[in-house]
Image 1 (cartoon, rainbow, N blue to C red):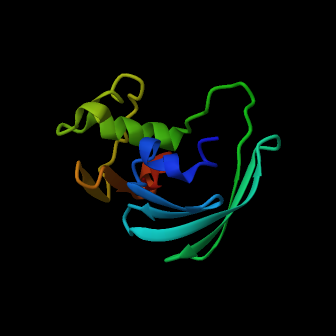
Image 2: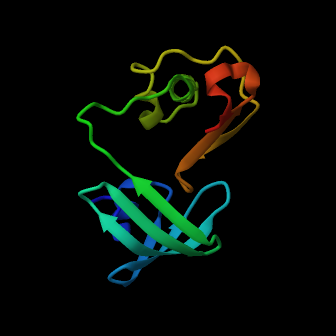
Length: 142
């Protein structure tokens, strides 16, 4: 239900500061990230019984997004790479209170320094870090 309602994205998705409804199945969405984009999403399929949502995108990007969600009753798994990166964010000495909450559940901080990082900003509401291949499962941009 959350993904099928773009108008609600700004309430729970920090990368979506603004949505304008254009009709019953269309919404203009602004995504904020390394490269901010403006998109118009048109819902094509909303089959909750199968856990399938398909939308056509136009604007700065054009294409189709397909999301499949299945509830198997188990909690979501967090992979080793994500665990290491969450530990790194929580261990940052200049951490904000939200990231500080990551310290207790995520303790395996990568033993290598990041290749690049963007500090958290309240104005843009995100931060990022990139690790090289020597970081193992944490390699990549997060």
